[in-house]
Image (tube, rainbow, N blue to C red):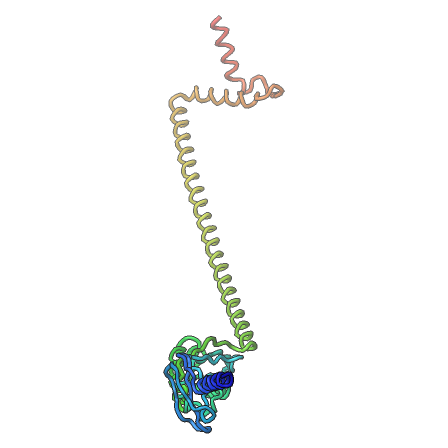
Length: 295
């Protein structure tokens, strides 16, 4: 009885081992190739549970997802202007024909990456060689990427791979060229700044000269008007004096004498020496006789 139980357990274990060797699964992220004695027997791309003959058949899996090929260092290309540019790019790709992929690169992803990198590099070199720096930086960048994707995809199909996208992340000038461009830009900016400064100085001189001219004109016109007003005032004063003198010459002579007396004795210490019969005392004498007569 015990021997029978051991036999049944051993048989069950053998069946389980056999079933484990026969059953394999494929999920939605994988392709599977079933080999029989080293030859491709079947390609499975749909997820599910599958069977194979143990010892005779074996299964190899390949990634169905979109993979990324990113360059480790920017590549140097030459434009149509014979100028060097550094290009940083990446490629999105996936396996669409597992059998052809296996036959072409023995199913080794490293070999596939090398082949794709060479294809993309050659295509980019050709496209950049047709265009100027401006075109590859901004003008036709999208067009370059689309054309590059189409060309790379045509070649990649030969190894069972589809190129989903080719992207140029960055286009830079080499450091020595960037430094030279920067120096030229700096010199140009300085030249423009100096030109603007000189133009500003010239305009400032013109403004100052115009202001000085206007000031001289204003001063001259003001002086002219002042002299005109002064002349008119002197003329009116002379006319008034002449009219007054003509109406009463005796009074005018008297008034002039009083002005002369007042100017002569402006300060207490002023002294004047004249003859007693001088005309200077003429009206004083007449004034004294008039006061005596009144008494």
